[in-house]
Amino acid sequence: MRNKLIFIFSLCFLSLGFSQNQEIPESFSLDEAIAFALENNRTAKNAVRDIEAAKKQKWETTATGLPQVNGAVNYQNNIKQQVSLLPASAFDPFNQIRQLEDFYDLSSLPVIDNIPTAPGSDDFIPVIFGTKQSVNANITLNQLIFDGSYLVGLQSAKVFLEISQNAKEKTDLEIRKAVVNAYGNVLLSEESVLIFERNKATLQKNLNETRKIYENGLTEEEDVEQLEITLASIESNLRNVKRLRDLSYKMLNITMGIDLNNDTKLSDTLEALTLENITLSLLAADDDVTKTVDFRIAANDTRSKELLLKLEKSKALPSLSGFVTAGYNGNGNSFDFFQREQQWFGTAAFGFNLNIPIFSSLQRSASTQRAKINLEKAQDDLTEVEQQLKLQVASAKSDYQLSIEEYETSKKSLRLSERIEKKNQVKFFEGVGSSFELRQAQTQLYTAQQEYLQAMLDVINKKAALETILNQTN
Image 1 (tube, helix red, strand yellow):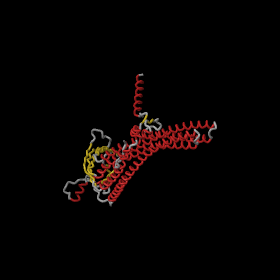
Image 2: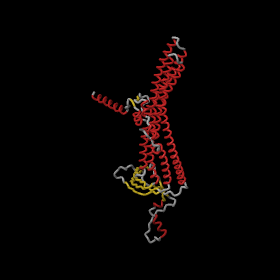
Image 3: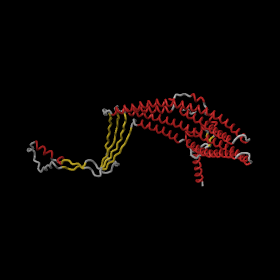
């Protein structure tokens, strides 16, 4: 029983820890949604991984110029040893005596009888060299002393890390803008649903009253039909807006990095966010685009081309490396290498490798010229990016200023449309106005309502677009 309780409590603690790791707030303000997305958005997490990978690649490049130690063990078993043929005369014990008789008079010496006859010149004896089994173990230290391409590689690894960091910053800016857009679309759809439902209730009330008036013979059937047409249009739009609301929530969930069907709640309102995002001082922001991440990314490309040019030039320089190696050899006709009687013979050596490029049939020259051309192109591209960014900043400021002006205009138009619609309702039910005039006033009101909502969303989105270009997040 005690073990079961321990097991149950362990499961509870594990599930609690998991829920804490996956905890999602009940509701989000816009700032909270942005902060959550920057931590949990899948693209943002991959951008962080790219930076870590770039750091590892930087060390990988650095390590190629540091000491490299490698060991090797080679065991060889000659199942069928190679046979070599040697002249048989090389093994004749009396061969030297016969050679002396050809040049010296040996008659005064004691006579040696029964000297074997020399083998023929075409005779060979099969000989096997070496043992049947052998083991060779060695360790080698290699050290790069000088290589121009290695120095360029170190600089390139640093630039690659900067590229990854700039890409992360660009990703965060784009995610922030995407969250702002998605958050605003959710608020817009929510406000649209409320407005359409309110309009539907008002129209339904007007239709019911008009039907009673028609049934009493005090108005024409056309007046009822005009309201029915308007109500049908409102109901259709309401159904569509509800579907769009569901999609906008799903889009926000994906952007924030949470489950598609999560029941997300928002704490900000569209009107409050609009007022918060009217910042006229942003229109006077510094236009120095060289501080923006887009310019830095283009500058990184130019820097990369410069390093490629240096790399091609460095290929004409000599490279120097050194090595130290040591090892032991063991031989035998049977596998007795772990026996104490086994003999091991040591070897050791050190040396240097110097590689001097002499002539490449102008291949290196062509590669250098090509790299130089690519650098010139990158420099022109950087100038073009700078000019384009200045144009984008000016355009974004103009769009943002226009959105603020449109917001003020649409707010006034909405108030006027509401008054006109109320006046036409009064005139219609008093019998001095037509159903056509009432429907026209209602249509004008509904259009003004949607324009007002869109104007508020534009203020939020246009400011986010300007801040993204200027790298401003506050």
